[in-house]
Length: 264
Ligand SMILES: NC(=O)c1ccc[n+]([C@@H]2O[C@H](COP(=O)([O-])OP(=O)(O)OC[C@H]3O[C@@H](n4cnc5c(N)ncnc54)[C@H](O)[C@@H]3O)[C@@H](O)[C@H]2O)c1
Image (cartoon, rainbow, N blue to C red; front, side, top):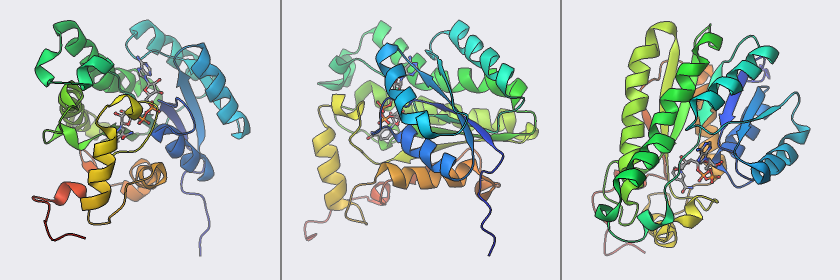
């Protein structure tokens, strides 16, 4: 049997490690185990400390600031990468934000400013960080982003974030179309609910977790490791024929049309 590591010799960028519970961190660990060298962004001093501590055992990890809403920071981020690497093979985009107030009550209370900034951080940023990486993605590559079922169906209190995830999934498909001819694949993972720093801000997270555990075909919630395994498939040659796809990693929850009253 060939024991070669799946991402040996590959270099990837990871946007969105906030702490050890982050989906991006599970994906990064999986990629590092499979031989990839990684670069990470951070947002602010507290996050920088946490990310530097987490990556201290990863060989040659690069850690740099990058607020994905700031074009000049994205440019500076890649300029620095280019000084150290001559190529990038993959990008993990695992970034989203909206104000807490938007997740409490009705969707329609969201202000124009907050709607725009949610879209900017949570959807447009995929395009911004991918486009800026193109000079380094000379031999094609793979880009993934993280979505949620609230993009497709109304999930009470997910509100404007659901609208942003719908835009994000659509951005992934249009990017896949634009970049297919240069060998870059772009896919989204639609993950089931997981307790992380961001999801703790969603007042409905408890109910989302309970629902998914009770009703999903696998009768459990997904873990960040479940997501990371699927990420590895999409980021590596294992997913070589897959682009513009939204892969549900949700224990099958999205397949249900109705919850049965006779379920255990
Ligand atoms: N946790 C879940 O239940 C769940 C389910 C499906 C999808 N997702 C998605 O997965 C992704 C990662 O979320 P997570 O749950 O791991 O939470 P997390 O809090 O660990 O990660 C969110 C990251 O987004 C980053 N971020 C926010 N604004 C930014 C900005 N302006 N510039 C740069 N980075 C910024 C944060 O710093 C943080 O690292 C998000 O897109 C989230 O919507 C999460």
